[in-house]
Image (tube, rainbow, N blue to C red; front, top):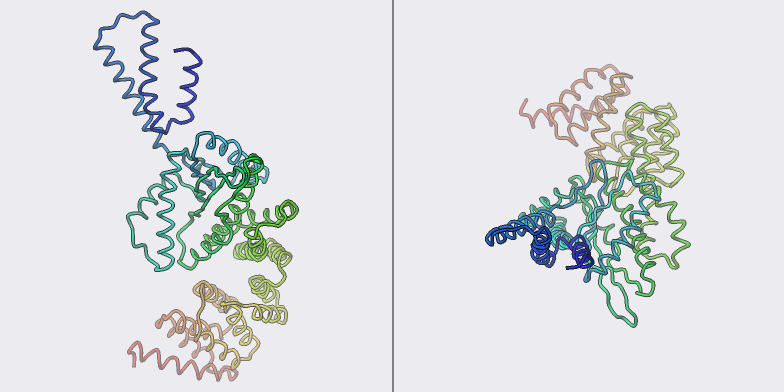
Length: 477
């Protein structure tokens, strides 16, 4: 066996060590090399030692092959892992994927300044095949889960979760690259994706899934003649969508800072995309149409965090940034109303609440604010009517609103000794939290504090009615 042949086989084994063909070649190749070495050294070895040596070498090769085949790469700590599980029909095409798609995808990440955030994990052909199968099964389980709210096939779900822990990815892109003839030779790039994030409610899963369906390129085709360009375009499109989807998942999972960083970068990239693609793919147009609203919301979430941590200047900065991206912004109006209230601009506060009301969709934070402001201004009857409407309706995420309202009212009670806060807290405990003992305490305290104040007559009358109902339910009469 010549050195060129040895180099050829070693090179093949390095590239395809995970394949069964590589196992067979190794079982023949390494004993042959052992025999050549022993022959060249002119060592005198008994016949059965030859057999034992061959068996030992083959066992070692098999163990190494099995370990390499099943040792999956792991995403580094504190990185967002993008896992590529792409199957190809030929080794030549596999090399094209690595050379063109993966390299260009990595370059896009580095050029965008996200190398400290993203890590690409490219699986070999065998690992891609196993992972793709598990991903496909898990996707079907997720569809059923979003429909029914429970996983019916826990075995498949558990298999996927166990596999996911090996790799630790956050975005999985899987599919196949094939070459097909359609007037001219073409590469067909069929891909799908899955975001792995913190556990979310079914409704949140539906948001991510809907955006995946609208945004993901299920099929990218390009001519063999423009092979390199085709892979570059594919990598660029997938990178744009990956940033959008990971940003969305980050936002819903409670990381608006990463979401803002990803989505803000996309706004700039779309200026280039608009010039580069004519027409711009409809999937990308849908992403662009949603970006401003997402970025505006992310700015407000960050502003809220800074406000809770008494970093007022930064809170106001992110509020300004939110309005600069999208002027008609529900969350920004609500936050702006709070800041104006804190600055004793009650008129401006009420104006922002009314602006929020006009664009509210399945959200009644504005009504909580409106009801409170009416009472703050002494319009107790009108405020009470709004609170009664609040009791009759509910909306997704209202539990968060209620929690924030309770903290806010308790602050007014402690710092400003504002007596109606006792009524509002009692009302929320009774009508929204079904906490009868707490509502009883707040209502009784309100009666005690307000008895000699004539302007609270209407609230006292309603409170007494509520107390009667509460005591009856608690069997205290």
